[in-house]
Image 1: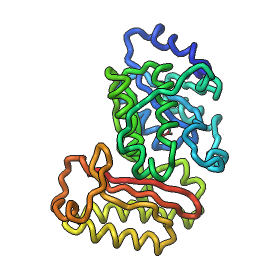
Image 2: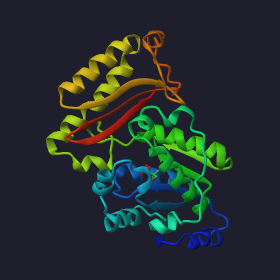
Image 3: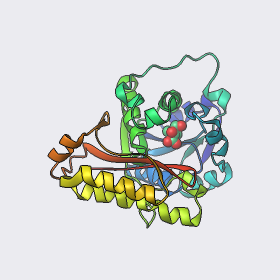
Image 4: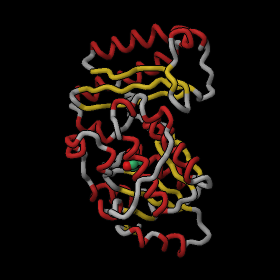
Length: 283
Ligand code: PAF
């Protein structure tokens, strides 16, 4: 496994491997099995793998969240090496944001002002800036993103359509603990009790999807359940992809069967023990 810190070193990957296709996985480190499942998917598809580790200051709208973000580079590199990753890119802030480059413009439509866009103003602007630069530096053929960050996937799909028409984007289903809790770097900030309680998120999402004829009622009940368990719920809603249009009660009543079309999702965000968690189920 080769580790690069300079963007100018990255073209050598293509030069030395002219017959291989490159898969790219962007991360902010604090790696867990969820990240490794993205690498595994790329390896199974037969690609050379490039993983970036960069904590992007531009996507944190809260400076204490940025400070608290776990920094575990040595451990991350050991995990990637054990997983058989080919290349890692660990740029500095100066490398990613030289003063000479202008911001890229991506029309995110309503994605920028709904759900995560509304709860974390400026977040997707920051994600788009860093991902655009990373794609340009790495020049991958395929990119893999985790469906746990569903709205981020939808945002990046817009970036790809508008700026990288030849790039393939693959979403990988959320990796979960045995309890159903979606794997996340933030889980390590929960107490043992918090980890147990947080498993209720997946149970609520599953209950909503399992009751399509009663979805409006189930959403209200599950929101109440989670609140009574100590969650500060920001949203628990059913949306239509790809722009996360929230379904109102009338539309929910019409959704009388689980379509399996993967055009809808139940999305959740909320805090437990002061840790903000998100999850979703696409159906
Ligand atoms: O999902 C993440 O870890 C980040 O948002 C990403 C895509 C690496 C951009 O900084």
